[in-house]
Image 1 (tube, helix red, strand yellow):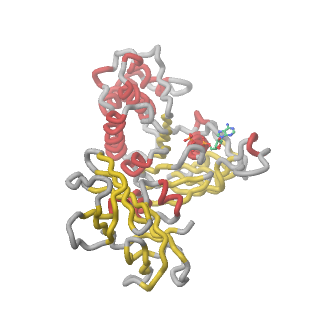
Image 2: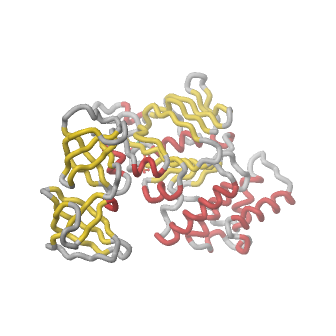
Image 3: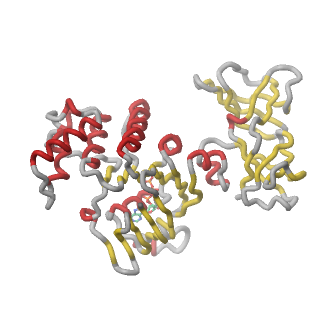
Length: 367
Ligand SMILES: Nc1ncnc2c1ncn2[C@@H]1O[C@H](COP(=O)(O)OP(=O)(O)OP(=O)(O)O)[C@@H](O)[C@H]1O
């Protein structure tokens, strides 16, 4: 559906830099399948917006190719650069510019009647009505666009992008201006819409929760490159390097030495402050006896108060009550570990506890 090959963007001001990163986007290649919710995730400045704007035609890449459904939108070699308004893609950006002097209906109708698109009035009425219904704005068609709540304005911006059923919808942090509760309900709404309408979405966010909750595929980016590409579960449970492990969720990294082979072919046993753990190789040279890093997520470590519990002894250094979980810092054999446990057991700092890893296969991460 969308095929990006060797995409590179060097901003003029950056070309002059003598040190450090020069490329906002650095030879990125990826494919987005029909009906996928594909997210570009990464810290501020990693190049995700530049990627999205390049697909939308708002930025002219330095090199590479962008093809949507066999239609070449950009190709540096062939000198192809289709203007944004001829790409026929839907776009919603962080500052979702709705037109304040128009009604809700007029805002959504605009893409159908602007420029050379002269859709017949009856069809405009039907399609706008249908889109507003889908977005839950059916009753507000005649209202002024600015007389809407933040969430409704957000949905209006989406309705306007969706009204001509674009083959590909580009969304750049479209939920970032909403409060936490609204953001959560809009997330669900967006996923529902995407599934119901079979939309293909290229989504940009720096919010890992959002990326995990919404995406079918996530590309984790850093410094203009894709560090890892996979399902939310893959990038959370099997990060391929330190950056991804650290950026997605919280992670404990424990240095350890390999003491033997595990049961599975790619598995090794590592001696760590939490005892011997089975870990998958993940590209780390398992044959070497060098030090390795084992990554364990905080919710994969169990805390127990009962005497004689299996596990290592530790001392609680900090405990933060968060309602649904307790977020502990626990010192175990010189290592300070972050551990999240259910709310049933609240242990105050200074208490001795037993901790053990429940993850059957931890992950080795290289640098
Ligand atoms: N017009 C520009 N001129 C020069 N440099 C730019 C321009 N736009 C972006 N950059 C630089 O390119 C890099 C990538 O920027 P980009 O906006 O794509 O990152 P991002 O991951 O979307 O960040 P954010 O989440 O903060 O929007 C950054 O280092 C940024 O400073």
